[in-house]
Length: 480
Ligand SMILES: [Zn+2]
Image (cartoon, rainbow, N blue to C red):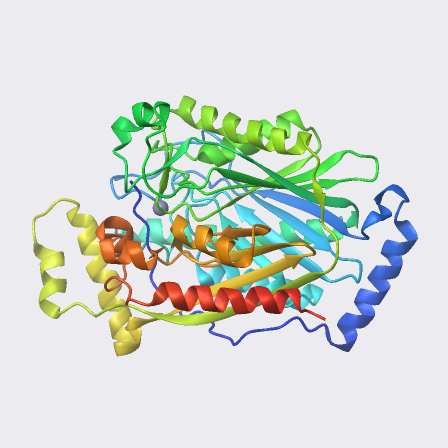
């Protein structure tokens, strides 16, 4: 089970920013290209791409509150596994660059993502669309103010510590990205995939019955076992960086200590197996997918090894080199919540003795505060969609907790060389497909409580998201 949510920050709703280098940018790109040409070795010269990586530890100091589960009633009491922000920078043969940041965090706010992207844009002439942010959704990570605001009302000291953490986090994200940009070097970038089967559709199968159903091949509901990998090899053949993705909730654990969960364990395992490589994890559309078994740290290790094994099997086969150009596109669309709560509903949430009372109180406080600032505009939300083309492969990064239907549909419509990430840019709520919205329950409706949002989404969001995604993928591929 997972409880997340976020209070809408006055985030930018800037119109789409197609890749534009400008004159200064073109000069820098040309200078960069010359540098690339002069240093590129013959072995890596196949496609003319470069890559670099960076990392910063983001394990919080003592005394911070955790996020993800409403049940925790005290701050974290230690570190079981360090949390990281990792960065992968890529540059195509024309010098056009993109930076992917992956973080061992449950959620992220639009304010943090936009701040980091704006700063990288200012310092390195990167367009907004060229900075991509994805969080792994580990529930053993710190509470961020403005994210999952309906989970719990923190004491003032907890709010202050979370603010200080967010300030430091932004600085570390920028440092990691700058290290990746500074280390851009000729490389062969290639991709492949394999499968892991520790996830299952949590809406369609009772967790207790999963071992039995799995063994009998009788698990129900949509699920994608794909483990796509993107590998960066140096001219010497050495693995420099590896990006692994999987569409499954990163919720093996609910311990009271910092931990990257299965995704963190997979990164640790792969970095052990491939010394010198930076391993990143970007989560797919796993909002209705859970890992099983879970609860024990040994289960996170087990799933981490399963993911690492899948990545290594993919690496052992012939990979497809990334060839062609880099292109990116980013745009917000406006999604609407179905209604605002009445005064009576807010009062009931504040006063009623009920299960998870503190969560309902936090929901009422978050929604009331939002309505006070925005009035009827509290019904609207600027939803971020981003697309990258890396030659022959395309990535889509969608905000929120996106259910698996989106990945299945988009890959069917846009082709198998498409990877769809959820939990990107801004994790503001669950993003149900039309099917899941109609069915309701947690992912379709009641998760809006921990997210501090007024009500479920208005019907029609799937079509809006899919239509804009098609447009942005096309635009990223057409980048001149
Ligand atoms: Zn979740």
